[in-house]
Every structure is written in structure tokens, then in C-alpha cells.
Image (tube, rainbow, N blue to C red; front, top):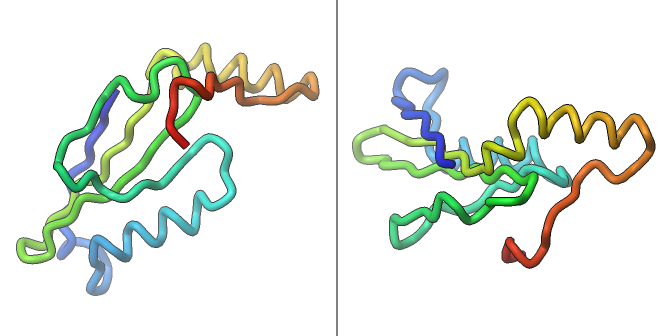
Length: 109
């Protein structure tokens, strides 16, 4: 699943750039097991099924500085990241088990 949030950079406080947004996301999610901040795709294409059968979320910022616009894109498996997936993850944490069950063969490192 792909979710996109359009942003008008001029409506944000200060002179924010796409690189600034990317840096904030990278700092916030550094070390997080479940969220990755990735660079925008150079070919402009996103594979929505890339994270199927995983508990991961990928975030990227695609910006056009000339027009002062950006799009924040989130890629996730909505079946794994929905309420039932969150419930299972929380139960595993409460039982002292690893919270993230990812099938590594499904996702490139």
C-alpha cells in the first residue's frame, strides 16, 4: 500500500526544504526496527507490494524545490500494519517475545 501526503513547503514554518524534511524523519526514526526512511526512487516508480508480508513501514520525501512542493510517501503492508497486526505486535512485546516477525526473503536490506 502507498499513502501520500502532499505538502506545500511555503506553508511550513521557516524556509523548509525537502532535504530538511528527510533529515527530520531520518533523525526521528534512526534505530527503529520497524520504520525505514529511504531516499526517493530515482526512476519515479514505487512498487506498492514490496513490503507485503512484513511489519515494516518505509517513508520517503519527494520534493520539487522550484515549485516549493513535496510529497511524503509511506509504503506498508496494510494487512500487517492494521489494528490486528498492532495487537499481535503488542502482545508479543508484553510476553517478552521479539515484536517484529519479518520474512527477510521478502525485503531487500
